[in-house]
Length: 269
Image: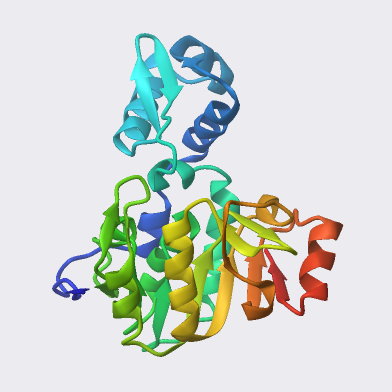
């Protein structure tokens, strides 16, 4: 277990700066690469009405953030499987709104558990605007993501390192979680369904999520609406264990009914 303490007060890093990683044009390039195998510099200059230099600067910034790979005359999407930095930019704006709403549930001075995942990492960075908040996590990615946020204390749980997810899992992670008792735990989900409840694509991550549920009074799930009604390989815990689901406004009527019938509080943003 590793405790990352706050950086000296002299270091300046605004929360708005943390979230304003990309401008609207760069976000649209990310969206294009969700459906296109390649984008060209000339195509982008015509689409946005900007210079070749500007587009090349955009692509360099996006490549530096691990979102795409530049090629001769354009760019292609990065295929990193479960890579969190890549997944973050899928439905980014919805995930950001979910994270901001979740942060409103955390008070100054509170200690919370936050699982690995893209939306959960956005939540951790949003919590940097509060005072004295401590985040307990198994996510190495999350720790790197908030490394410039001086107001946030992070406790990193030990365990076996999963390279793609950049997270620790296994017996040591569960042993570390057993030492804590908190009011709220924030969990991501690869799928939410009636039969499997909250599920994920990875068995070891599901085991850690169950251990987190035992260490918290309230389980709060952060998931975009496309996850509701879907199924993944490994069940983390049943819907009866969930206190709240925060999702986006595109939640289907069927998805809302599923959560309502399970007695889950639903917050859409």
